[in-house]
Image (cartoon, rainbow, N blue to C red; front, top):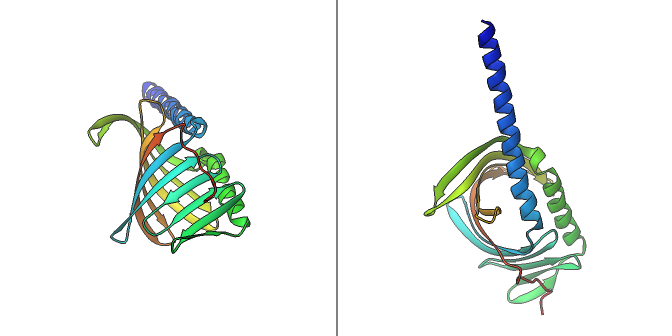
Amino acid sequence: MKHSIITILALGLGAAAAHADCAAELQAVMDGHLKAGPYHVTMDQTMAGKTRKMEIDAILPSSFHMKSPEMETIMLKQGTWMKMGGKWMAMPGAMSGMVSGAIATGMEKGMANIKNLQCLGPQSVEGKTYTTYDFDSSGEAMGIKATSHVTLYKGDNGLPAIMIVEGEAMGHKSKTVQHMTYDPAITISPPQ
């Protein structure tokens, strides 16, 4: 009986250490992503049977240029602009601050909102092998609560390469596939 308890405790402590190592691994990937500089995201989001495509250039923490077939948005510290009907329009000044604040809060609380983290090791996706992490996440941005199941594939550079997010917000389920590439040549400027 003593051996059983000791074995159970040893297994429990081993699992806790493995989970801590896994969390430290994922934290290093996320920290690297925040410091990596400009990057590009190709995103496909499927919701209610429809797929929406978007291209995003990002320079964290506050510069984004988002393009979809329906619209285009540029967000910088000094303002946010949306292109609708072929014309750029400045958005209310508070919009940049609200979005930047939501992103900053998400980055600060990111690891705290992660549950059921698993380091899956090498996994094959799209014909390549990546170190893979799987976890659940929840949070709130601009008053909207969301839950997600995330599979993150780490590239050879130690940064996120592919992220698959199966989420739910406001009663709607979605699946988002993001492909990320890092490029120091990316710049984001106000519209001309």
